[in-house]
Length: 337
Length: 135
Image (cartoon, one colour):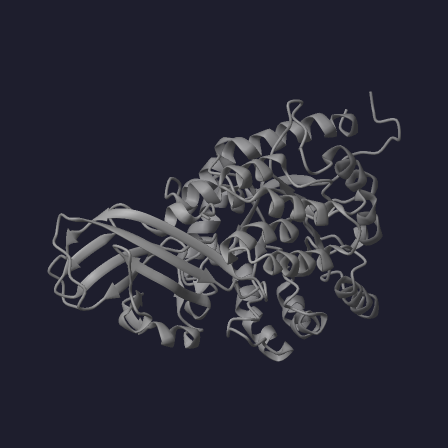
């Protein structure tokens, strides 16, 4: 039986190694072992990596490293999808790089992506529209797509995103786009995150304040500032405020259909997730709505499974990504029959 | 309170005593490598005695810095799987004795302006003898 709408899934699946942060930091799996894991557990074929997590001396990439990486990808029949790069504009504390400096900082990272065979780089908001415009000639030379992650607390219509959209409209380059992060379409903070905070001794009044602001009205970016100010006014300990403030940076609410506005410019996707309920659905992020939206939009790039439970849990990222793939199988079946 | 990286910060084999002073191994409490410029050793106490920041050296990649020098180290990266060493010259401990180490390490993730990531750990560690290496 085909889907009632006749729509077919065109996008492909993969995993970002960020999902395995617990295993990697505990030294249970090396970078190369993580690649093997993705192949063995059928969590590819797409593979996304983070330059500054998985490559020593990044953005420097030796010929030997690049050759070995390409060999392993070929051996495991995996496909490099996206290199996550970082716009470290506040590398000097208390100051920000100007656009010229930010472009110079990103340039070797884009060269690294080309050397490793990644067709896409994930940038961040620190690389303002003018920075991407400055980098476009290099991206054109290398054939690399680039774009910022649309990540909590921002929406597709946040002023910072509109600035990119205006620039894209002007330049009309197929190499410029966006990388939606599903954490920007959350419906609630993950229950396991709230449980973790309670068990770690988080004062309940502060927790309620944070959740109340998260669920309440207002721009998601404003909420983060609002929480920090109100929490600081209570005299709460900085480590306590820091642990709660993260809630506003990882998840924010947005109608899943809002992604359709930028769908033609989507170059990669982060399927952010935390935990599943008893029925195997994501507890905080509405995948049952999000995946059909990306089918409907005709998205044909890669979606990386991105488990971020390691922000507060020692649980296995391997089990988590396998759980997401089961959810994908179930939700996408109507579009693949 | 602890965060999910607190367990990484200090480790059971990570305290050494010897001629170079007391050495504490430290893992980076984040998922990616960081420029040393955004690392701040906010407080260190050994057996409930605070150690003055001027006495602490931060050692990484074979280099040794005073804490006050860290903000300038924008080219020096702390690889996410590596151990840095906090060294306190002159602080003595008997090998084989246990000591409570309390550390607060702040990170200013350079791609998230205005975020201060505060990680604390407190652990009783058994001092090993520093191996005979040239400093």
